Image 1 (tube, helix red, strand yellow):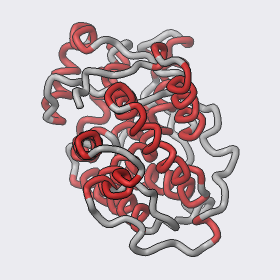
Image 2 (tube, one colour):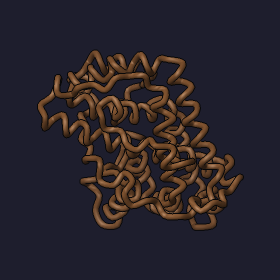
Image 3 (tube, helix red, strand yellow):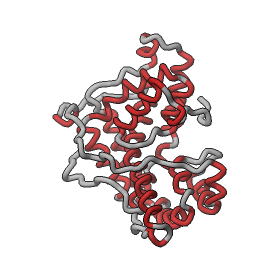
Length: 292
C-alpha cells in the first residue's frame, strides 16, 4: 500500500465517514491517523472488517490500565523540564498546541497496540497466548479517562514543515533516521517553529540517553504483555479473512502495511507522550490508581 495515498477525513462520505467517527470515538481522540487512512484508501471493505475485529480491544478496563502504564513507562525515562510555551506563543496558540499534543498523547498507547496486534495477527505471531482472567480483562473502559481532553490535529504539508522549521526538522530526521515521509507529530509541531525548536532542544538529550532507551524497552514489553494477555483473539488471521471472503493479495497487503508501521513504532511513537509532557499536556500516569 502506497502510504502517500490516503482517504482524508474531510473526504470520507457515507459508511466510510461513519467508520472514521467510530475510530475517533473508540480511541477517544479527534484524529484518524494515517495507518487507518491508508488502509481505507486501498482496501476499504477489508479495513472495515479488520477495524471491527480490533475495536473491542480498546474498550476494556484492562486497556485503560495498559494505556496509563505505557505512558508512565515512557515518561519515566524522560528527564526534561516543562517548557513555558508562553515564551514562544500567544496564549491562544499555546492552548491550541497543548490541545493537539494532548491528542497525540492519547493515541500513542492505542497506536502501539494497534500496530503490534494487527501485525501479529496478519503475519502469524503470538496473540492471546496467556489470556487474562481478572475482572479488568472484560470490564468497560472508564468513561472519564482521556475523555475530550484533546483538540483536532492540524498539520503542515510535508514540504511546508521543512520550510517552516528547517533546522529542527533536519535534526529530527537525523535522530530518527527518517526518510522522505515526516511523521504527523513533527508536521503538527512545525506549525509553531519556535515552540517546536524549544521542545526539541529540551527533549533531544533525553531521547539520546540510556535511561530513555530502557524506558522505551519497558513500554514495548508492556505492549507485548498486553497483546499476549488478551481475553480473546480477534479473528484477523489470514485463513480467517479468507474464510470471510477476502482474497490473498489484499490480506497480504494489509499485513505488510501494519508490519511497516509496527517496524517504526518504537522510534517515534513514544515521543508523542514526551512532547505532551514537556508542553504540560500529558495524561494520567498514576499506576496506583490504575494498577496493571
